[in-house]
Image (cartoon, rainbow, N blue to C red):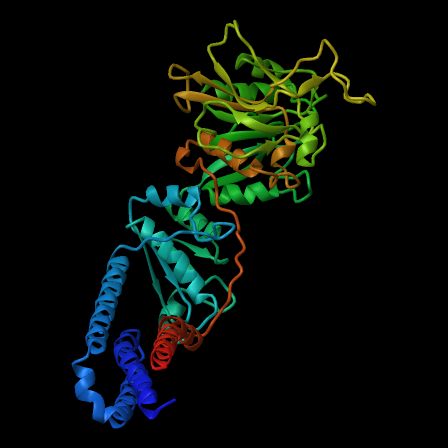
Length: 509
């Protein structure tokens, strides 16, 4: 290759370096921009030294004119890109393309943020160099973007030890403090669920008591066994509800501070006095969730009939459940009634070994009962579930069968009323909310929505966030800056320089 052509190539590369130095400076690498300018000047000197004799002719040639036009077009393109980036920065828009939508807030979080009426502040005691710092800041940014009432700030516990001491922050403890006025809650796990629960706690500072009856073989809130309710108890506490136990054999009436009563599948029947205490509670405008199990007498049958609900003496069988990997005695529910509880509910639920319910009509009671959860049409009520072959007989009821029913009663005129309306939820199964089955499909959300409806917390009726694992790559600031510089500056500039050099080399042949 002649020296003249080599000099021309270096001159073009120098022009590319000179133009790109503006971008390099803009993205925060001034030292590299100066180095590019210096190298470009060296290449220009080489170009002048090798093309001195033909500069006049080249300057008046058509090629020079086209080079000038191309250079001007490149400058215009850079200006347009800068303008587009400026507009994008002022009007940010993101798309979550991750498999589990890890960067999208759940309906529960969005609803919680929309309902904020006063400023909630999250103070995070994390250093900028910690691996979880960026993850937490990204999460807090998404919350702030959805509500003007959510604010956050970061405090470096090393640089500001007095503030860390003031908040009682320890390295091994919770280091995110959520506050609303004087009420605070601490976030141990850096997850959306934990942060949303903390906001709920500070906005529902006065917990509502929910009593679980015991003494008849019911599932209990402190029981950690597969048949216990210890896990949903924790979730209820996050919802602003306070579960407590109640033995009606020793307490003649439901306490006045009871927001709701839960009777979780008694194995032995309630005594007449106990059943009367529950009836008195409901007649005065109380709220209750009664779960019944197949082949059991609860002693509450007359009470349920007063609310136009009756349990059928059979067990629900659904062969289609096998398609979901479950037994045919574990019916899957996909259809729900028109209720606040399930209005936006789109999750399946399962009710292991459930009995169907019936809504009574033509009764003297003024209670309004309606279906809440229905089995699939393929189900039926098996009257002999202990038989070897589970096949539907002619006299057995076919699906869809009600598995959960709600009933309301106007109690405005009641003596010693607790509220203007009594609310009752009856389910033909208790297992769906136990530790063993609560995580199946939408079981836990369904149970918590029922409890929120009974407690009068309709704003908590939603789909709650789930822990969504993300595959993350943690990089240092230097590594991130290097990758950014390489992809935005080095790679495109190198490709442009190579392309122009190849074009000039071919043109010179």
